[in-house]
Length: 93
Image (tube, rainbow, N blue to C red; front, top):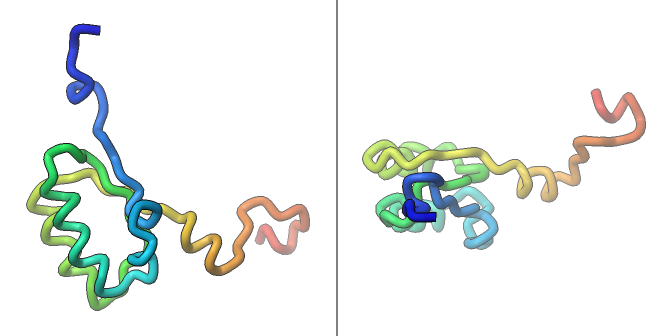
C-alpha cells in the first residue's frame, strides 16, 4: 500500500471508553472534547450523553474543527440496564 491511511479513514476515538470519568455528561467532558477535536490525528469522536447545560460549550470545538461526531449508546444502555434484544415482546416495545 503506497497511500497514507489518512486518505482512507478517519481515525476515531470512543470518548466515554477512553475517558470514563466523563460519562456522566457533566463538566469534565467540556475540557476533553477540545483536546480531541483540535488534535489533527483524530477525524471522528464518538460521544455519549452531554448534560443540557454543557452542550453549547461542547458544540463550539466540534463546529470549529468539523470533526465528525457520532452518538455512542453503550454507556446509556448499561447504566439504565436497557436491552435492545429482550425475548419478551412487551419489553421490546
